[in-house]
Image (cartoon, rainbow, N blue to C red):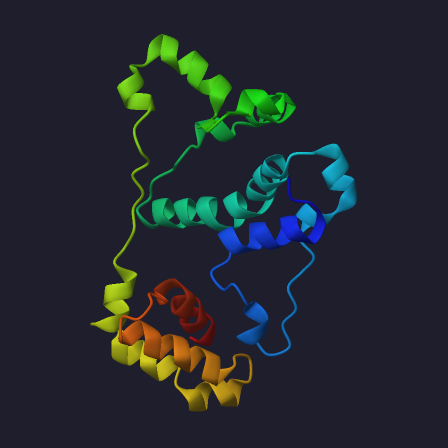
Length: 192
């Protein structure tokens, strides 16, 4: 099991768009992740539990739920997220770890209940996320726009980003060496 800074590094690698934010943003210093806090590690001994808590406290409200709110409000739709009802969340937080994850089976306790009422083929299918073809858009119709936003002169003038690091990623993206679309999109949103 990973502990301390190794746990923080592992979590950052799987959730961060930039594996080395310090090399991209001038003066940046990665914050001390709560996963490395020894008090939290004592309260939640499993790294997976600490990662779940981090998702609950940061990823859901700052990313997923914010996007759902914006998208639904844009079309005058009010969305409810039933599994985030506070009673359900409180119950889930109290469950022993082996009722949340058993082997490679996630949401184990909830699956056991659902198996009684819902056909397994509906429960055990892969997630179907919605992704926009950002990588292709940034190489195609949005290429000039992005290129102007992340050109060396504006980046140097504004002083937040290392223009050489961004330039290398932009080159790799355009040459299809690597898909840096989401990382470059974040820089473009900040710059715009």
